[in-house]
Length: 335
Image 1 (cartoon, rainbow, N blue to C red):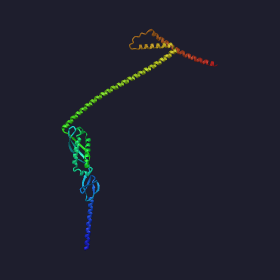
Image 2: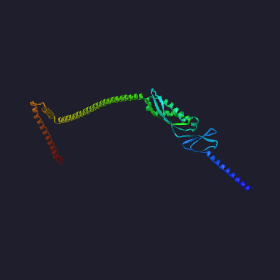
Image 3: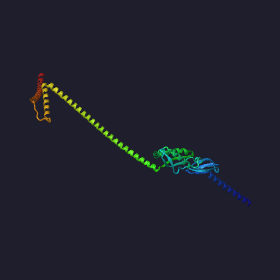
Image 4: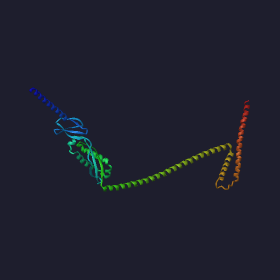
């Protein structure tokens, strides 16, 4: 019985030891294995000193020696909108509503280099926004928000880099001015519109004068072209007339060479008749006195025409007679 009791006690102790070992193993697994969510990173300390940073996923640490000191979110954050009073280069006081977007890129630096990230970024952003706005005039400040946002983001990124912070972007959401400044802006806008209207009217008048001058120049060019074309046509007409006169002279010379003095008399009388016809066809010609030698010219002209006709006919008969005689005599000479 005593032996059995000792055996039972021994088995109970073994079970307890096994259970304790199992519990210890479970604790080791729980303490040594860390699963980090995608949106966070864990900062690990050993005996109060920074050891490493756990990235999202499955990670292992030394149980009971290492501990998760900080769980840092790496999601992009937005700093609450804040209003900054600034003075522009033209000494106008305005208020700017701004906000900053940032994310943690080095969790260790963000927890060991700075205590309050939001307050630190707000302070740096306020100073940088005042400096950037002070370089611009009011009109430039309202129309150059993109360039100013880029400048603020660049300078703020350099300032926040030591804290393990990445400045993704900055936004100037609104420019607030007082009523007096708004009224001055309205007057300036009206004056600017009036100036533009006056410039537009002047440019329209200038364009009208230019178009009128261009129209006159075009008209003068076309008139000059018409004069040139007319002159070319007249020159061509003179050329054709000269060629016709030359041909006529050549024919007359040929006729004179063939017919002698009768051809000369015929041409002179013909021109006298043509001149008389032009005088008779004039509008102011009422009564025409014809000299006797002119009337004689008509008869002489008719006689010369008959002479030329008879001469031409005689030449033709002579030609025919010669041909016949030649035809008659040719066989006889051959015989």
